[in-house]
Length: 309
Image (cartoon, rainbow, N blue to C red; front, side):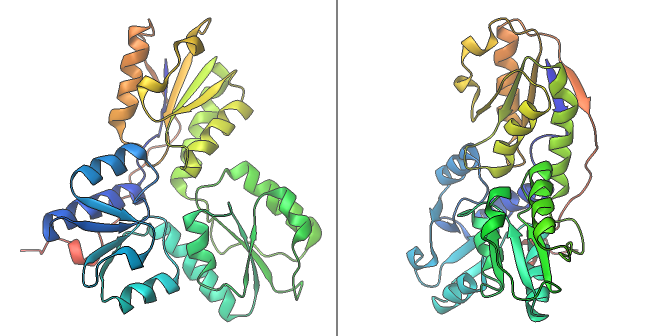
């Protein structure tokens, strides 16, 4: 059994989940959160049991309540809607997503066409595009490039959703560059360090694996990408599960080496559940495949930082 390192919680998810827990401690239940705080079923269900109410939009929140914005970020229109209802907002947006928002604002100010590579309907994409809707076009994969039109070939830049597959994103960029040779790159890499690190670890592990199990939820973009990366890197089979109980014993037939990893919003307890299940099926030896060590930590939102004595 091979365990990919790094896996699981990234700094942005850690900060977002802790933000909700600390806000619960400070303000009590019910505490409102717009959308899922992070894309993980277990995390959302656990917080709901503690009195967190997950809503789709701000108009579902009673006026004057406390509302937390999820790690994926929101558009200025959502901030305005919350202010109109006099909601006390706490922004748990991942700082790496905020960075992409700032890039979108900056290039919109300079009147660029911004080509945002990402998945249609994903909350992060909606938030980023909402910073400059008249300047941003979504490009959902290489096949979407043909439909893109721009005003000035010298003023076009690409940005991306932070949780994409590095390889697929670069394929899209290559297609865009063939069409728009003067396409500019973002000032710094938009795909988050944790997304990249988890993909690199899976690539290192997959060639040895008959089966890769990715722990993560179906609506978690980076978890879904890990399954694709595992298969592309040589794993014979790869599956996404939320919980150990979803592992089909038939997957294990004839398998000698199983690899395990987890998406950036997955608590380690869920990975341990899969390890324990595999142990029951005779996979006793555990070896880590380590490609990076992560030490990044993000400070909590200002409203929740402990007062220094």
